[in-house]
Image (cartoon, rainbow, N blue to C red):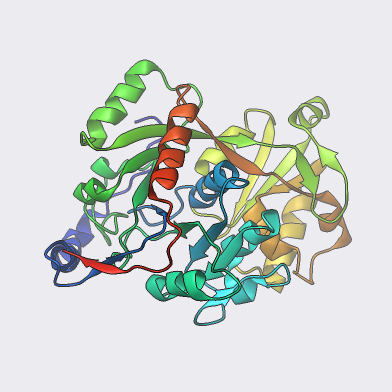
Length: 370
């Protein structure tokens, strides 16, 4: 596969065998009904993956929000990864990243009319959303990163698979990057191959279709990143790709996300000079990081600027040690997704039909599913 980033650490395969036995036992308990999966009388759409690292969950959740917003009252429920709080929190426009995590913060800032909540216990979070006075009018719940959270049985489950790390070529942790076996994709209603290059030919699509072993009851889609106009993080200026190309700008691509490879490749399509500066996913920037960013920027020939993601911008904007030059030079590149092969209408109809057919006026109605 072009751009394959799958890495197998073969010396760790014995540990993957042990890990797999534990995962298989857990899934068997859910499949047999020993551990209960609870469903609810409200449309619940889960968006998740079985691969450690980023598969583009947040842009796909935002895609669903844009599709459903204006039609239904939406809530997004996340665990709030790396937040510095506990329990259930309903986000407000004034919530901080430390309280709710960077991805929920990003979603709330962009969609003020959408309920955004965090709770590591998804069942408790759903019940709070459905019963609390402030949110009891919710009509659709989007579960972010909940594919392994089997205590909740979503009505529609979307599994995201990174084009650069196809699950059929990978293996279980710690030798590979799979949280579950590739065969667990059978639980998904819809599978979306994400971060696809824009130039895949028909043969490439057929190879992916064969590799993923799609079941008759499943739908397969392919998505690619789309980028909007860049905006200055500390200011009001905007920039388009044409201007960067025309000015022969040197770009410092600053990312603290999992799997930035596709974004780097995409940026190189409209900028000749790109220097990556990468940090771990969900990284909280420090004084030393601020110094490293300044050094990396000033080492580039002028004209130069910093391009970063919306998720990283959420953590950078409150960093007190950044220099004025860094602040003046930092631009945020918004990321959205495009559904490939002219199948956007097909995916939209699939989601809208599910929500419409499962919308209920009644309140909480849990039941244990065997």
